[in-house]
Image (cartoon, rainbow, N blue to C red; front, side, top):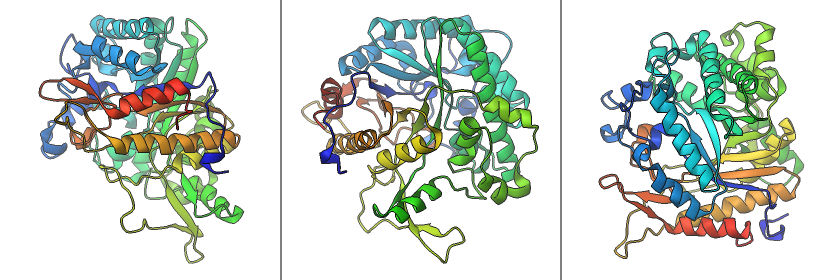
Length: 459
């Protein structure tokens, strides 16, 4: 089935949203009792972040959230995916609670609800309490319990109004980039055995946090984990080519944490994949079987962040039986140099839905472009419009081919601090002038608004 053959609309109950993360937009890193995070310190490390940028001010969302929520209402989204800053709520990560931090999120949640926007809350989107890093961070098995205690506090405070929660955002990244490659906070370059140990503790924290959320819920919650989805697409519609892509999607690289099944199988299937046990060998952490029982909590949806894919092709000379096809000369890439591959939003949801049997919600999808305010006072970003159209058509095609599609959150609602890339990359539907902090909706903002209004009929 081709994209042009599918039904014109998404279901009436499909969730249309946009997303952002606390450290990337809030600013106010040392205001109102907030404790330091590992990212606060990492940004002070010479050469760690592009041009010495930091999240100290970011988009100043901490002070300007009413204006930002008003923009979300104008956009017409039904849901906003936000994250809570752990050290804003618990300055030391555990122990004494910062009431002013809780009060901020109370105000933000109430503002969203009054605008008719449903908050989908992520507990951890990378701003880890510095005090807990000094106690070993994710390398310390106690990190799972620290995270669960934080989750319980959040549920006690917010679950009367917040029904949807995510535990972790992209463990592949905060473990892989943060603990193996040193490119993100906390900037460690550990051997793969310790990387896998930290990852196991993060997954254990996920499981304990799910248990804590449900034990303290004020209403029946919907809970998920927002992992990176790195799908592999087939070179053709031939069944053999599709099987190669499916196998490559769930394969494991023994020198890296960048894969799908290592993080997803324990959460959704209750076991590490056999390919991981075989390829990592003695580098896999030792743990009791009860750990997997904790990690394998019932979840309500399969949440996944997808930006692009790779094309897997048969290769008898490769030990794995496949390789990744190189991109042709001049292949379209985003400003971040990520390939523009709409097929990722077809094959990713299809393969993940087949394997894990849960409804799919795309928790991040978007692109960085080189945007600026034009002489007419507007921001023209035709590439983002084309990207949204192409990717959503593929997601709709997956839905029509049997994937249970629950929702889509565009990344991001506004330009923001893009981690080690600083403010160089602009992912937003809303342009932010970092000198004046003026917000300017881009052309894509109005296009996405029309997509939402038409339930995708204008795609």
